[in-house]
Length: 118
Image (tube, rainbow, N blue to C red; front, side, top):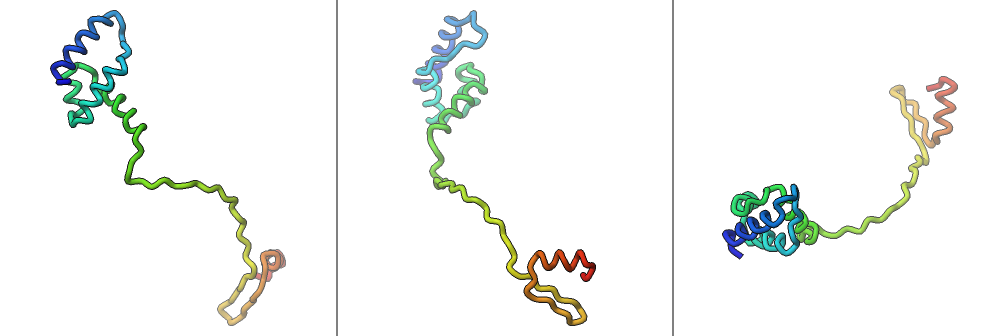
Protein backbone atom coordinates (compact mmCIF):
# COMPACT_ATOMS: atom_id res chain seq x y z
CA UNK A 1 0.00 0.00 0.00
CA UNK A 2 1.34 3.42 -1.00
CA UNK A 3 1.63 6.28 1.48
CA UNK A 4 -1.02 8.26 -0.41
CA UNK A 5 -3.44 5.33 -0.04
CA UNK A 6 -2.57 5.15 3.66
CA UNK A 7 -3.43 8.82 4.08
CA UNK A 8 -6.85 8.23 2.49
CA UNK A 9 -7.46 5.27 4.83
CA UNK A 10 -6.47 7.42 7.83
CA UNK A 11 -8.87 10.18 6.78
CA UNK A 12 -11.69 7.65 6.35
CA UNK A 13 -10.92 6.17 9.77
CA UNK A 14 -10.87 9.61 11.42
CA UNK A 15 -14.21 10.55 9.84
CA UNK A 16 -15.74 7.30 11.03
CA UNK A 17 -14.51 7.81 14.62
CA UNK A 18 -14.54 11.62 14.74
CA UNK A 19 -16.45 11.68 18.03
CA UNK A 20 -13.71 9.71 19.87
CA UNK A 21 -10.73 11.54 21.37
CA UNK A 22 -8.30 8.63 21.03
CA UNK A 23 -9.66 6.04 18.62
CA UNK A 24 -8.23 2.54 18.76
CA UNK A 25 -6.47 1.83 15.48
CA UNK A 26 -7.34 -1.56 13.97
CA UNK A 27 -4.57 -4.18 14.06
CA UNK A 28 -4.69 -4.66 10.30
CA UNK A 29 -4.09 -0.95 9.80
CA UNK A 30 -1.18 -0.98 12.28
CA UNK A 31 0.37 -3.87 10.36
CA UNK A 32 0.23 -1.87 7.13
CA UNK A 33 1.95 1.12 8.78
CA UNK A 34 4.56 -1.16 10.37
CA UNK A 35 5.21 -2.79 7.00
CA UNK A 36 5.96 0.67 5.59
CA UNK A 37 8.28 1.30 8.55
CA UNK A 38 10.09 -1.99 7.93
CA UNK A 39 10.35 -1.10 4.24
CA UNK A 40 12.55 1.85 5.24
CA UNK A 41 10.24 4.80 5.88
CA UNK A 42 11.11 6.76 9.01
CA UNK A 43 8.61 7.32 11.79
CA UNK A 44 8.48 11.04 11.08
CA UNK A 45 7.93 10.54 7.34
CA UNK A 46 5.10 8.11 8.07
CA UNK A 47 3.63 10.59 10.52
CA UNK A 48 3.77 13.42 7.99
CA UNK A 49 2.36 11.29 5.19
CA UNK A 50 -0.49 9.74 7.18
CA UNK A 51 -1.30 12.32 9.84
CA UNK A 52 -0.88 9.72 12.59
CA UNK A 53 1.06 11.17 15.55
CA UNK A 54 4.70 10.06 15.51
CA UNK A 55 4.40 8.99 19.17
CA UNK A 56 1.71 6.49 18.17
CA UNK A 57 3.79 5.05 15.34
CA UNK A 58 6.81 4.87 17.67
CA UNK A 59 4.77 2.87 20.17
CA UNK A 60 3.76 0.47 17.42
CA UNK A 61 7.42 0.00 16.37
CA UNK A 62 8.35 -0.94 19.94
CA UNK A 63 6.06 -3.94 19.67
CA UNK A 64 8.21 -5.16 16.76
CA UNK A 65 11.32 -5.13 18.90
CA UNK A 66 9.68 -7.25 21.59
CA UNK A 67 8.82 -9.97 19.09
CA UNK A 68 12.30 -10.35 17.55
CA UNK A 69 15.20 -10.91 19.95
CA UNK A 70 18.48 -9.29 18.95
CA UNK A 71 20.72 -11.65 17.01
CA UNK A 72 24.02 -10.28 18.26
CA UNK A 73 23.42 -11.22 21.91
CA UNK A 74 23.91 -14.73 23.19
CA UNK A 75 21.34 -16.31 25.47
CA UNK A 76 22.77 -16.80 28.94
CA UNK A 77 21.61 -19.20 31.60
CA UNK A 78 21.44 -17.67 35.06
CA UNK A 79 22.51 -20.00 37.82
CA UNK A 80 21.88 -19.00 41.40
CA UNK A 81 24.67 -20.02 43.70
CA UNK A 82 24.91 -19.40 47.37
CA UNK A 83 27.85 -17.21 48.28
CA UNK A 84 30.34 -18.96 50.44
CA UNK A 85 31.85 -17.02 53.28
CA UNK A 86 35.56 -16.71 52.82
CA UNK A 87 37.66 -17.55 55.87
CA UNK A 88 41.36 -16.96 56.22
CA UNK A 89 43.14 -20.08 57.37
CA UNK A 90 46.17 -18.28 58.71
CA UNK A 91 47.31 -14.71 59.25
CA UNK A 92 50.90 -13.54 59.01
CA UNK A 93 52.01 -10.39 60.87
CA UNK A 94 55.41 -8.79 60.51
CA UNK A 95 56.95 -5.71 62.08
CA UNK A 96 59.74 -3.47 60.90
CA UNK A 97 61.99 -4.61 63.76
CA UNK A 98 62.11 -8.11 62.32
CA UNK A 99 59.38 -9.63 64.47
CA UNK A 100 57.09 -12.02 62.68
CA UNK A 101 53.98 -13.93 63.79
CA UNK A 102 52.86 -16.69 61.44
CA UNK A 103 49.85 -19.02 61.52
CA UNK A 104 47.45 -16.81 63.49
CA UNK A 105 43.71 -17.15 63.07
CA UNK A 106 41.15 -14.38 63.50
CA UNK A 107 40.45 -15.29 67.13
CA UNK A 108 44.18 -15.05 67.96
CA UNK A 109 44.31 -11.64 66.28
CA UNK A 110 41.28 -10.44 68.29
CA UNK A 111 42.94 -11.59 71.50
CA UNK A 112 46.18 -9.78 70.71
CA UNK A 113 44.26 -6.60 69.91
CA UNK A 114 42.15 -6.88 73.07
CA UNK A 115 45.30 -7.39 75.22
CA UNK A 116 46.88 -4.32 73.64
CA UNK A 117 49.82 -6.27 72.25
CA UNK A 118 49.32 -4.97 68.73
